Image 1 (tube, rainbow, N blue to C red):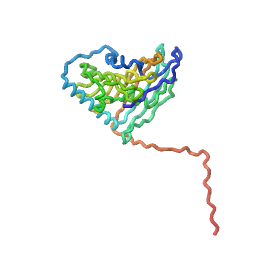
Image 2: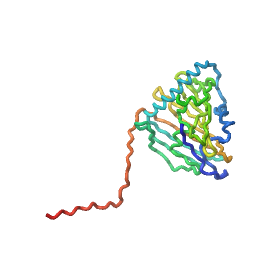
Image 3: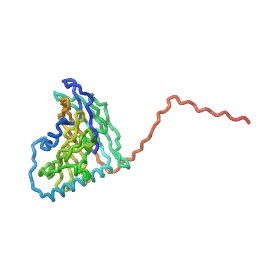
Image 4: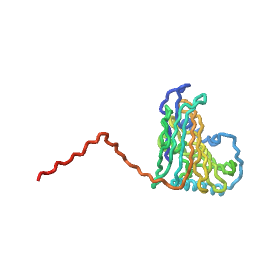
Length: 296
């Protein structure tokens, strides 16, 4: 799947007042030794996973079901409207915010399934050395929210880790690793590395944590954690996405980046979208000449 990334604009050195801003994490030159070994580090906290034995046929059934549900969720989302509030910030060495990108939008889909955004609030960004585009917000962290669909699942090794209880949910936990990491110089394909949490009754992903690979020295991805909410009793759509990561570029510069995206007010139905091309009005319109009547 294709994904946008925020690119570093400058290679100037870091200092207290002048920081390199970027989006999204780890030196590309460490792919072979570190990316495939990140699974154990994705959790970012003390694991409460309990190892429970499941037979391979049962594991295969669970994987087949939750990946099929991902495709169904993606299709169902095109029939909903919702609000999205996205904030990307860079953090200084003292913990202060050094730049902010904020964009609040109403989201819907056209009849042919294309996403349409109506901007509700978009102040002037104060980030100075990266360029955040609307496309960067579509595939947060470099991969789309429903990355594990049946059509791509063969590109991954999916390993069952055990069960974990979060709030009132009993969840299966799976570690996701790409079988082969694409060459960023030859392909725009981005794959997911991390973990997913699957409800043990409905077999639907309710939480994910991970990042996109591959990267290069100027394009980085953070570890992104996404929680989902149950919509209309049958779909689990993204509810809140967050990242808090220290990212390292090829020149050794490190930046602290935070990102929060809130999705709310899911409602079934589409809003008709009509794109009207408007030509600017002539400020000084010339009077229409009156034709001279013909002589008899």
